Amino acid sequence: MELLSGAEMVVRFLRDEGVKYIYGYPGGAVLHIYDALFKEKSIEHILVRHEQAATHMADGYARATGKAGVVLVTSGPGATNAITGIATAFMDSIPMVVISGQVPSNMVGTDAFQETDMIGISRPIVKHSFMIKHPSEIPDVMKKAFHLAESGRPGPVVIDIPKDMTNPAEKFEYVYPKKAKLRSYSPAVRGHSGQIRKAAELLLAAKRPIIYAGGGVVIGNASAQLTELAKMLNLPVTNTLMGLGCYPGSDRQFVGMLGMHGSYTANLAMHHSDVILAVGARFDDRVINGAAKFCPNAKIIHIDIDPASISKTIKADIPIVGPVDSVLTEMVAIVKEIGQAPNAETVASWWKQIDEWRGNRGLFPYDKGDGSIIKPQAAIEMLCEVTKGEAYVASDVGQHQMFACQYYRFNKPNRWLNSGGLGTMGFGLPAAMGVKLNFPDADVACVTGEGSIQMNIQELSTCLQYDLPVKIINLNNGALGMVRQWQDMVYNSRYSHSYMESLPDFVKLAEAYGHVGMRITDLKDLKPKMEEAFAMKDRLVFLDIAVDTSEHVYPMQIKDGAMRDMWLSKTERT
Image (cartoon, rainbow, N blue to C red; front, side, top):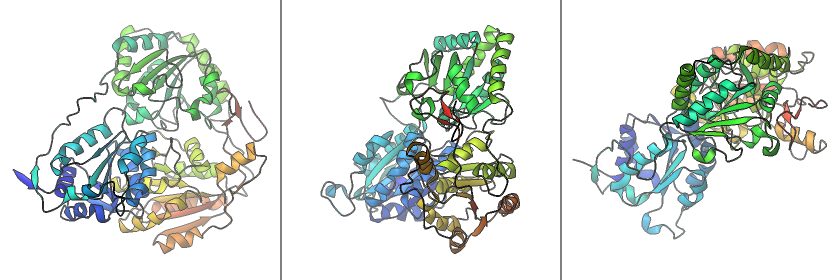
């Protein structure tokens, strides 16, 4: 029998669970845990410069690996600084375990120094939360936390630990629990076979079918099954922002991202479809535009691990609750068993229409100009070319995010990391750091803007300390680009507080943090400078790229319209 303190149990459990990294920031309420961590050599702790960055690093790690990221923060402001990152993970169904320190249990509720009700504050944005009431329960609670975070529809879990629960003088028996014991939690492990058969039969009978695949396909490791089904039935595939990479972005059957800034082809194909196979997608408002006019002639097949997501926004004709990988595997088997190929003439007619929409313009055409100024779209196309489409790309939020998802061709899942649901500026750099730490030999890029990068720019210091040579692609247009675009389109170009009239010299700033900075203002320098940056395998390079300040993201759906209603330029609409 091994006797450990509560603090030692926390650290020992993390080791036994196979955790490689903890992202955190110390403070009084967690110092017993940090002291125990000092003696544990198999876990690497990453000291961030702000707790929000710790959660985004853990988030980036989780998105790229599928394993729960682990965060350790102190009580009060340490815990509240983590809230934005917890909400980011919750909105995008990302597994994360956040261990927050708390004041001693006999002081809870007394407004003690650095006390906040972390359980209460985080309740709406976590999958579950625990407060430790006795040190002996730490191993079982932590096992439950990891199981909850990683199973079913993943999400963040908070464990709040009062300081006296980690007292090094009090020892208790430690046994690593091999299984989590949760009586009331049993996510579906397979879909209903009858419903899956109905869905397969409906797809085979469809005249204008389409696959609408979301982040659940990436999270559920179902890209291979989705691709097999699409190829077998010759179906067009569109992805949500979160689903990019779950189907090869350079494949002929990929019709682009859909939604608010989705491709003309994808949005029209969705609107005119007669059967939609929605896989791991939640019919988000940024996809459907408006529920009243959404795809009026389509029957909906909806596959999701979370029953609460089905028919929440758009009613499903054939709902299927279950893990997307097993459901799609069974659907593929049923299609093979039925042995009835879709009518070749019907399929050809549908593809002829889709190819007409696609035309000769490609998925996202844009005016390349006369070459005197760098277009943000061109910068992303160059990034894709230089990295051969193989990079892990984390983005912040804004126009640069939309340009990245439109013009970078993601052919593999888990390579595109962005804050989709919450839209968190400041996400990109720490998320890229979390990926680079785990995949040191991979190309990792952070696509950002001069507004977003300053939200967590202090993490350039962390990058130097832990040797994280990510490449920062700053599309600098001197403004909060997406805000300015809306002000252009909706508010008669009244630019209320969307221009940044005072910006740092990002090259000097990067150098001050010990990194390499490059400023690019001429299109002819874009390729050689970007190639030079990615050739520096052991250096963080900050590429500050001056881009066209007037450029908008198109298409842009028209408010309260159908999916087919889009602005194609400042003056042209469907």
